[in-house]
Image 1: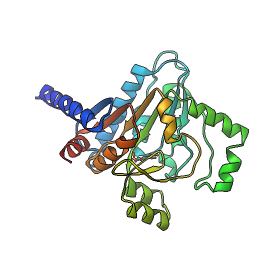
Image 2: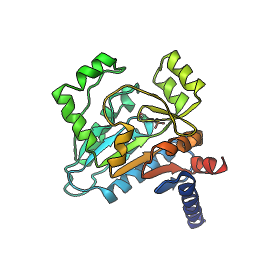
Image 3: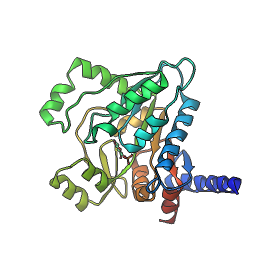
Image 4: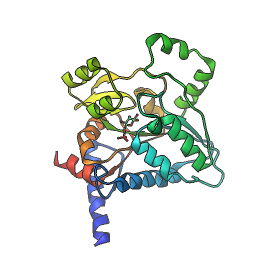
Length: 254
Ligand code: BG6
């Protein structure tokens, strides 16, 4: 029976790959909306995949969120002589401390025997502060490293869920609703066709930077994220999606 289930997931993976036009898809059993262990399994699958691609002195940039926290939780030394650098992909964009990328990269680096650097950016970031900070040498230094990342690992969220979690202003929530935003990743909000509706102002990786990064890994599961995943993949061409069975089945039904 177990083998049968595994083979079933392989079939789902092929179907989902076609539907999303993704290069590679990995599906874990279950529904992470309902069971935390499913998110933990996605985290472990992500670490196993990292082990298969990582090379010495690579730079790994990571976003925030509970799914990325699960990846950090599952982190182990990636290879014998590591020397990796973990960095937050972007400045803080409204997550609580526990789920902020700065904290997550610290845990990842400690567990992987790697190094880390943090990006200290106020949140929210005003236009004037932004203009000043991008010129700050210590910040420029980290930004350059972020832009030269070899691997990016990121979450995908439902647009309105993420906007509320970030205590986004009423005006912006209205803008998202009237433009029917459905997904969010890297602080960008997208509609069903993948069009950018809104973008949180912060420093770090911009969507267009992803094109030149070798491995972009999206980790997102749960039936509630089905629409968000489809929407994100219209625009953001990540190389690998790690998801769960419930999200996959819901996407294929839609
Ligand atoms: C955020 C990422 O921190 O996590 C977002 O910056 C992503 O891009 C979100 O949408 C997903 O959060 P979670 O908790 O559902 O993994």
